[in-house]
Image (cartoon, rainbow, N blue to C red; front, side, top):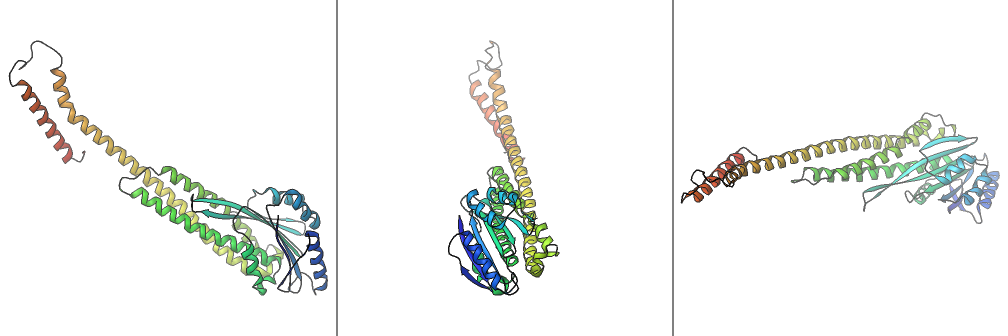
Length: 333
């Protein structure tokens, strides 16, 4: 569905009445009146959609003449972060991330942008990173808004990468909790929790890694449409590289936590086996003596002696105590 639509001319927003066709007609009329068109004195229309149906997006596709493949990607989603050119239109895909406190999961969404001469179309999938804060920021910054579609892409990228930083801090807190659980006295088996968090970190990396070369292309001036806003994108790239380093560190730390956890679990199992073996040694002597006297032979030493039973019991208890004390002293019990 259409979330918002407006014309931005000379740093000022003007709302649009009517459907998408009316929005583009109004933008073209405004551009025709603006001197220079498309620059700082020009204007552009920004249409925002959230999970549009094929029929809804067909109106935008036909109005702007978007490439069918890019239009299909915008509707179906599940694309990797990328920047592609279709004629005079740029198609940019960004992955959004939202951390869910209740489940400690990372929810992945997408924002797709079509940028051309005098228009921006944003298509959002998932609940992450609503774009109203981006619009509010741009509408309060005339200098940034003067960059037109390039300014919109920068603001969207900046918002997405800022959320990456928030998710990074939440993942770090989860790792700290796992470390405490691993090294806590009598540790529980948290192997499944560690692997679950490693999957989330991998999903995080899959979302943010491909965005780095996209921003590098823009910063290096290889996308002519954004050459006037390179310093803005350079700032976003710096933030993204810092996030990338943190994600790598989290992945390595999770590997170390998993190794330590498995080592501690193995140590605990060894201690359990030592205790089992020690107790088996303690009961071995009375078991042997009781087994000998349970064989029902007629002629056995002290079989009919008055003090035979208490003597044998005393011998068994004494031997068990001696073995127990020796094993405890050696650390087996």
